[in-house]
Image (cartoon, rainbow, N blue to C red; front, side):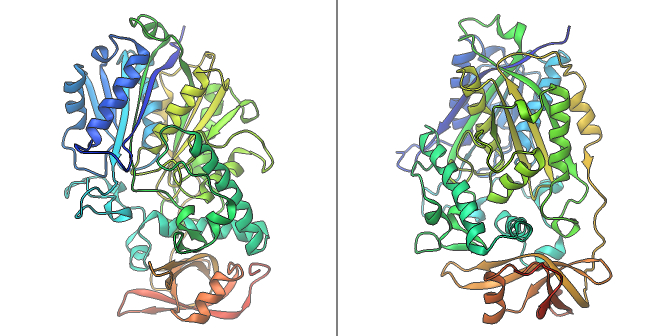
Length: 506
């Protein structure tokens, strides 16, 4: 008989803005979250942890966080691991932990992570600029960046630069006017803010209306068209989470445990072959999500139609919209899309947000609010995806092999698009965005499109009022553009033409 895998403890911790010193660092918050999880799992649980998986902190440099955490908790793990960079890491860890438990490589696994990004001293970096202060200079993995050198030269380096490209492509595909598209996106985000307002660990607890979210103003500056500040991830937050995983048999032997668990039913992991935005053939789909979700459903034998609740990774509205499309969740589906309120309201610093979604999903299932739930987690620009299914009742799945299968063969989707680094000639815009300065003035546009020979290009539009007005008025997908290469800057320039191709411009 295959082992049944359970989440037997979960904990979350928030260090609020008004906290008094001494302030908690990431390891302090991991410890507190782990202790909350341990209280649920059993009085002797923490000392029996034999594997610790830590989501890499980006707000502080931590040389050996798993070892430090083990010392504080009185644990003697035989295995410790620290993730790379990517929001898929928590769910990927859960999938791997299930395999470790099923293979009897461990009996009790702690998955945890925390960030302390809120600036509490005059010299503390803020916002997106703080995201890599915990990464050592000799960091060996290539997941430190989400864009290639061509894209970086054109100004695309951070999530706030790249995800608007998906949003504008989705807007074009919808056929809606600017106002109608923003209204639908704003209402979805307003619903998320309502959930965050009820979550005890959310960084912000003020619900917002759709108009408050999508309308630029003094306290809601435009970031990257069409996104305002309230439409993007809230980075400067201090949050931590932890979960304890075990087999059902082992968890039942822990002393004094509450006895209420959530069963892990199946997971999936995949990476898109088209890693960078310039390599993507479409900006309204995610082959990696489709593959990861298909694996999870097949392994769990739970179709999407039977899932009662979701926590869809919600760094930006487009991530939720594409997940809905790939999972087949209709726009009028009443099932909840978030358990936390999302990265824009709950808070989403670093790579650890998904662990809060998993912990909250487990809590809701154990409390009887849902019989099943599905969580998704994204790494970079929809490059890496991990999916998990959870339930109130166990299944008969074999967890010994799936994580190894996914790590051995993770790739999904088509081969990368052919690209033109030094682009010349006429092309068509496939998607785009406009970046803004803090004083609300547009400073740069980034255009992605195809030359007539089919090669993908990235370019900066002309930095003039007419170009910015055209790009932020009606949808510019499908507009013709004349592209030329500037050797001095190493960048392509795109001059918008008068005519659109087909029905792309609206």
